[in-house]
Image 1 (cartoon, helix red, strand yellow):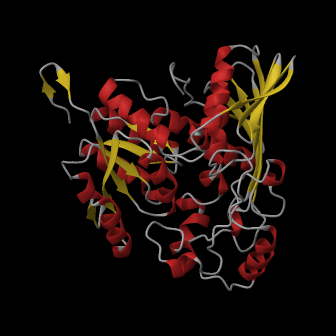
Image 2 (tube, rainbow, N blue to C red; image 1 turned 135 degrees about the vertical axis):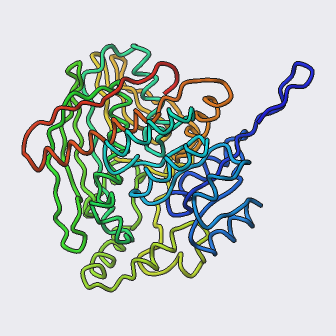
Image 3 (tube, helix red, strand yellow; image 1 turned 180 degrees about the horizontal axis):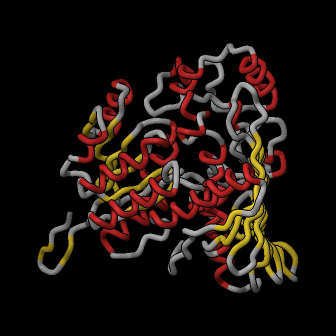
Amino acid sequence: MSVEIAGQTENKILRLGIAGLGVASTLFIPGVEKFPKARIAAAADLRPGALQKFEQKYDGKTYRDVEALCADPDIDVIWIATPNHLHAEHTIMAAEHGKHVICTKPMALGVEECEAMCMAAERNNVHLLCGQTYSMSPDVQAMWRISQSGELGRLIAINTWLSTDWLLKPRVAEEVDETLGGGVVYRHAPHLIDTIRLLGGGRVRSVRASVGRWMRERPCPGNFSAFLEFEDGLPATIAYNGYGYFDTSELTWGIGNRMYSDQERIVVRAALRAGEINHDVAKEGMRFGASASNATSKGSGHQGVEPKGSRAQIAWFGITVASFERGDIRQSPDGIYIYDDNGRREIPVYGGRGTGTLEIKEMYEAIFENTPIVHDGRWGLATLEVGEAMVRSAKERREVLLEHQCALRTGHA
């Protein structure tokens, strides 16, 4: 991957292969494109149209199956963005072919699968990073740096609140089937859990939670409330609702993870209840390489809200407030707000709120500079364990103690 010439090393470029050109890929690809030391070089997908668009845009190689992509000798890293229930299989496959892996959240369907993925990476001496969560966004990273600085004293509480329209969005069968990693605990909770674990240092001791399934047309987890206690006694709460009535973007300057306007939600909800939405067609309109006709089909248009700030902000996962002995931190329109004894001040943060850039940067530094990966497989396993504990706690109506938590590595988050 590099050549030594007269004591100098040529510029190293990380060559990325993407397994799965679905909706997840459209979220991280722009972030990868911003990193100058990476090249999107190959992809695997079942849809010929997506592969054709990929070849046209990136002049890259394409494959109809993931194993062929993993066998490509010119690829350094595979980004696993296939359906949730295939994450373990494809991650292990990539590791067995000697590829480093970035796996989209959720890492897998259970702790045992995560453990097998970690062991495959360790056995083959490759890096495994579990990414594409909101904890990797610049604003949360800035909150973490302030927390680590100690200027506000000890962290004493973390509270997160997100209401959005997850259940109204186009959903194919696997997205609402819990056995295949469907529902908000698998698909949205990792963003919030990762953020809380990052700010709190990683080691959650126990979880007490309630999980609801209140939409007949989407019989999967759609809301939850959780109390997390860290090993040092730090408390954290999450309140999540994905039914699309109230939206926390109303409280965050119009910045949020919402697809539809208020009026569109009324129309989509009625169509969903009447069984009038073709979910497969609507979902296709959101994937990489979607045609213009599909992209504007009923129920698939992405209705975003332009932020008032000066940066391009792709998504906000509700409101997160970290409280310290001498102040509080939360997101702001253009970065983060710090509330302390001198009042409120805003610290600008640049880089947008998408995913992809930090993951590929962290992987690059691990491969070429021997920098430890922070968001590694063990970290992803621990985040998934918290989600599993939420479901178990809700079912058994008790506190669940955790066994696989890990501390945050030192260095950058």
